[in-house]
Image: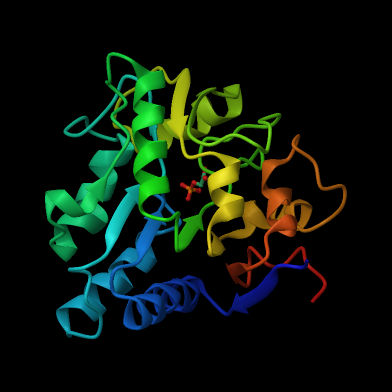
Length: 244
Ligand code: PGA
């Protein structure tokens, strides 16, 4: 299976295209289960979704939002946490109700039990209709770091030093990042639609490697080559390492 590759001239066009995939799904199935990432890449998509919501072009009121991942030790209200970024950039601007949001609590006393909780919810909802993913500079998807087995659902991950270093960009002060809690590769593989969004020249080599051989757990994004319905939505810079 080869992921579909869609390349757009710039970040705004890429972001609009990613938003359009979410809008199309919710138009067809308003009660969809959607899992969207935090981070820098999705900001334009969130802006496009908020604009469409304002204009009444999409209805989020019946969908369920599943959080992709979180840093262990951090949670709602902690500046820079995944939940904090999602609240500010997406969930509050759209007006999600608390009962539509399922999110890993990075401060849970028992993180393993927190994984079980999320796994049960996702299973009871029938899995993810759509998962959107950024890609890390080490090829990670969500916080599935290099080496993560592909048969895992939600789990705790030991962070790669590169993830801990790159992750500093989300915080306004140095923050120790050692572990993450994340949906698993199995959730990604079982999602009905998976989109990977990528922007900027720095991502070009990792995007190219994600779509090349070998398909290997050492570079988690290559797993999307095994997904039955995956699409890479890229701006021209992120797609510049591909021959398409
Ligand atoms: P970014 O993060 O969108 O902030 O580049 C992507 C990722 O690490 O998955």
